[in-house]
Length: 290
Length: 207
Ligand code: SF4
Image 1 (spheres, rainbow over the protein chains, first blue to last red):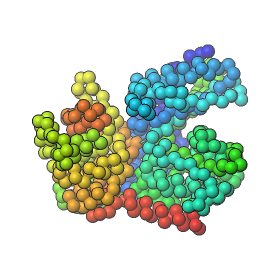
Image 2: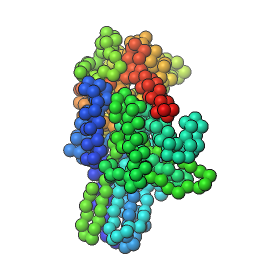
Image 3: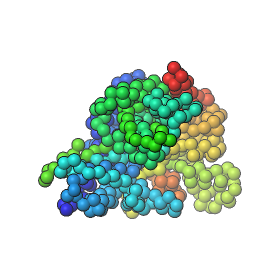
Image 4: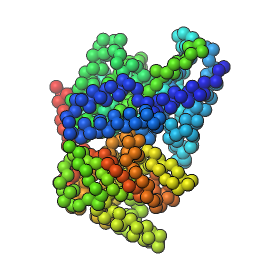
């Protein structure tokens, strides 16, 4: 199998240092919506300056380079074990080059591994079979601040009067945004998974963030709910960094999956403004980055 | 619009600041997070740990910098460790609330005019801000590169044995961008935003 280590290294560099244009555009729109001279306006201005600077200097957008989460879609010709070794090798190289901060800490001893490699969960690598003969590797870097404000609700929830329906999902999502305040480095993005179990719910709530920020949900009802949650979350007035303001949530994506008759989980992953996501596509000899 | 403030900052300049104001800070400050606050508190305020000569020397070097000065809650990424030609590579704020048990006492003891961090602090610190007077400056989470650029010089380092992120770095900054989120008039933007968003949440959920 071909060695993709250098190409994967480039994917990591790009993801850590170059904020996707669509995210930057949303931050610019958010800036325009905030009042000149307000704290929210100043925060977004600082954020956007930082984005331009790190892209130019090829340095990390945020010092917390997060958990590297890979979603690989691979044709049968790809040896998964070998690709895993290459991904881990690229992570180590990227850490040496300071594209990533050493971020893997042993939970019992508190020792930092120094090279960003932990056990099989760090970095996180999800595999799925590819429908064609293309290999695609999505990478998301998810920081600790926003990961800490993620939440999972088991419906029905008395306090929110949230039942096992889409109205219940809306209530849970808004409550999660309220609880997060600015601590997940707002304005952020919401990935929401309806159903699954506690484990698959969290995985799906991250995977759904890979969708194109500008796309629409194929399910008309969920599409409507996505827009409604974004709009109402912004009405909360939490604003950038929790300083108060109009921009709290820049986008919402929802996925639903099967559940047990006894369970109804709503899982919300919060992604900070530093929504670092890029994709590498290998088609024959050609390699593209998105 | 943006206010420029030079460190040391006067009590009057601090009383003029209101929550929500943007400020560009210039001058000399130190970084300090958990280990530093605990060290100052245990050694010099509570005196549960006897002060060594080295502790006393360090304190006497820091005192003039901190009189009317600021502590930045920051665990920087620093380059040039081998050559001691230190440079800040990334210098975003860290979560401040962990210093809540110590912060008020430390503000009074060192005559600080404020602290810089992220996420805001609690009632003890807000009271100290009122009495001192001092303010809480909020730096922008994630804007690590931009903030590192505003650090024009690393003047020195104390207590390197605490580790790089926890050590006391004496730095010179030019136009470090921050927002006042707790002022010396008992106002906290964090509390007011939380309260307001709570009542809107109730309306959105009940309505
Ligand atoms: S939440 Fe995001 S922007 Fe904020 S510190 Fe963490 S990684 Fe950086």
